Length: 279
Image (cartoon, rainbow, N blue to C red; front, side, top):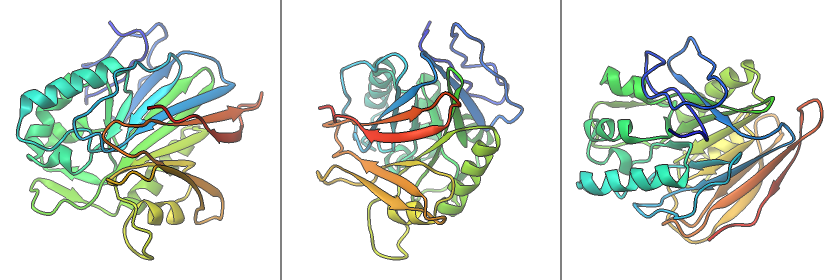
């Protein structure tokens, strides 16, 4: 039994439930999962990784903190045993949510579907539509994290998938904005997007930069599809000229990024600050 968190992972809103000391709130929409974290409503901290390519951190996440990945956590090889070992390691490390990168689908939707039941974390994406209805029900469009009286929304987007059948890729920016709107309407004070779109700043190029600049209602983008070693955290402006933070790590499980979100007594977001990056 995992007492750290619980989430819903299928259309019945029952199978895959991990028990937690407070009850999980049921949602009418099977496209949404719920995660509960320990702690109060004064601060929320998220640790993020991307492009681990089969490598994994050995340390466990801290109680009350969120641990997420922005895609390509698998290496894309045709070796199911190695993928299951990776999922087990991610479970032990305490991951709560991850998005789908191109490597997770390198062997087709059926291979990904076979991995999901072993995951003790939510797999989230809002711009892929799967021909396999069962796989579509296992991948959540959004996740709501509850910590005390705080509600933090998470969604995810992935890149184009040339040569992969059984997946329809929709506009990631439009999909992320629609998911952020749904999460805000459900009372989320913060919205995080796990985005595996890459870091090409070329104007008009579909990337994490374009998502940040054209986003609406998203506070932080944990980015992936970047294989360099220039880890960074950037502050950009969205469509409404509000700040949106864009971060990524160097990949290959060499670093974790950390952000802390501070709230006032009315549970309003007051400050976002970068934490020390962990090796």
